[in-house]
Image (cartoon, rainbow, N blue to C red):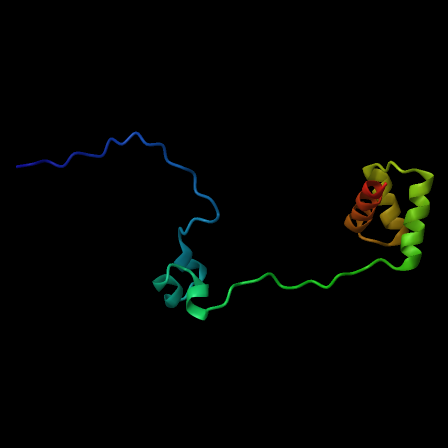
Length: 106
């Protein structure tokens, strides 16, 4: 009689990433997705795309005020970016991005 021996594999286990297919069925996948390995493109023939975002441009007055601030002091700290954003009622990231593009333009 042969007795089963427990596996003594010394291969290290790799950590799971969010892209692993562990528990995909519990995330609401359809039976078709399970049949094709979760590839909805194989089912529908379409690729998933990110939703298109409209581009929002700054108004001329806002750009002029930002340019004026930049000419006074070209190097902006995080605090200064936040203050300018509050004063102009803009999102902090928009002010940061405008400054980033402006300083790289020089």
